[in-house]
Amino acid sequence: DAGITQSPRHKVTETGTPVTLRCHQTENHRYMYWYRQDPGHGLRLIHYSYGVKDTDKGEVSDGYSVSRSKTEDFLLTLESATSSQTSVYFCAITDTSNTGELFFGEGSRLTVL
Amino acid sequence: AQSVTQLGSHVSVSEGALVLLRCNYSSSVPPYLFWYVQYPNQGLQLLLKYTSAATLVKGINGFEAEFKKSETSFHLTKPSAHMSDAAEYFCAVSSGNQFYFGTGTSLTVIP
Image 1 (tube, rainbow over the protein chains, first blue to last red):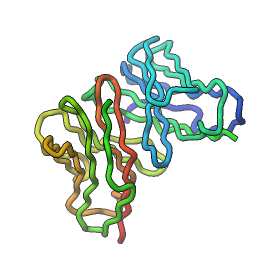
Image 2: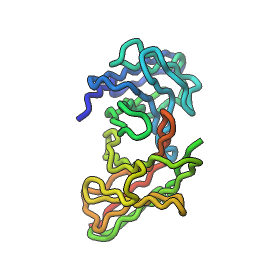
Image 3: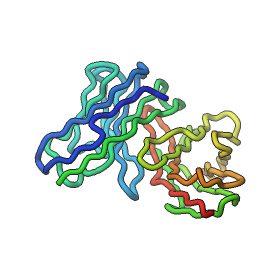
């Protein structure tokens, strides 16, 4: 199994509070992604990274920011959580864009009350 | 932008019956296509991928998919469903550094 760890796995928070989700990999893969999964929407890309300090927005990036200061860590931050950000968040990695297999973490379930 | 459409959010088959999950893609260039499976409370794992080699792609657990350019389709099949195949299945297309997923098809296997 690919070495991907997401933390926390479960979090309940209140509207307006900041939240940071962490994705840690031990594979030294270049590309890292944050997706959110919601019923009826499948997986939607929030942000991705193609190297240390190199990130770009996905299709649902509003309200989210990311940082990647080391190859192995990709952080997703909700500056001020809203109920619409209640979701399951998945981190994924790959070493080769386009043709490479995406390896997924086990997900982080976030509930915003 | 690339996109994939999965027809049927829920599919039920009897154990031993043919599994057919549909996926159509939109792409202006030859695509790279993937099928992923997700079991409850887990992340996604790769079933198979098409990267412009053979049009019939074989994956794990007896699944296969056929790339049909004329129909812009990449349907997933398995000749005989097993109870352990019950899961959610996602079709995906990649372009540039991004992967785009369909909305998923939940497969139920009836004993």
